[in-house]
Length: 305
Image (cartoon, rainbow, N blue to C red; front, top):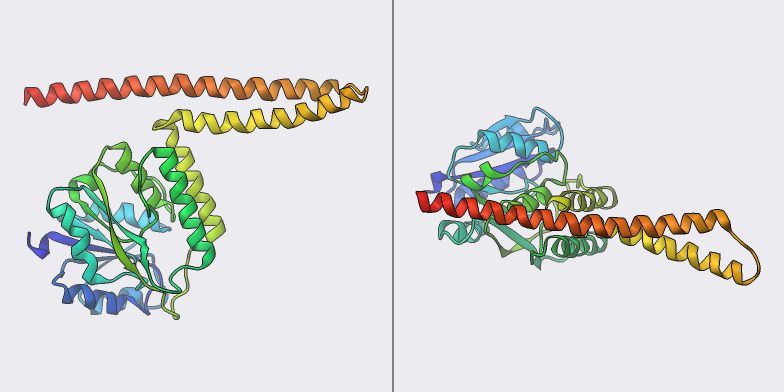
């Protein structure tokens, strides 16, 4: 592999404090094909990136996700390194990310920040939120990934072309991870260093708001991969609600008070919850049969070739 075959993709928004040094660091590592997709920064980020020799493309929409989708359509290089422009990642570790891809072991490599992060890189809230989101993802999709929210990744061009991405915000890393699982791509993680943000660069991430959106994305997308999990959560919520109202109804009845409307509501809660479990089982069966059919078709196509 020639380093020219690797495109370093950097999405930016007001990263003037770090973008210049980041580009210099990647050039020191031998990477000259650097694409900066800039979200119309107001602090001169695009101008600094151009001055350092990067190719700069202005984003046509808003949000990190939209920037990534736009950039993926422009890239023709066989290999892609995606890295945030906030100076929290080390350019020298790009080689570690490329390793499994170049060796043919993986289609997509995620840099795992949670094993080697520096003091101050995460706030306590961000660290707890990251771990909870990763646990939720692992349970929902039945995989063992430690850091699906990492902004340092390596791809093959073929793997990127397979992804069907729609999210425009910070949910993009989650959607990429989900799409790789859905498309049965080989995903590996390598430990990387994660540094604190520059004091001159404010974070654009809202831990609560964006954390909720990321969790919602994981849950919404799981319905086509693990419908039992999707419908099971809904069913569980309704049945638990029915049990709470049911306990109150029974307690009141033992005291000689009949709660007819609440009794009806309790019954509806439990019936609807059971129906969700049934829908989940039926959907899971359909998805399983669909996967078996697709696998059979793929095997037959391989034999014909």
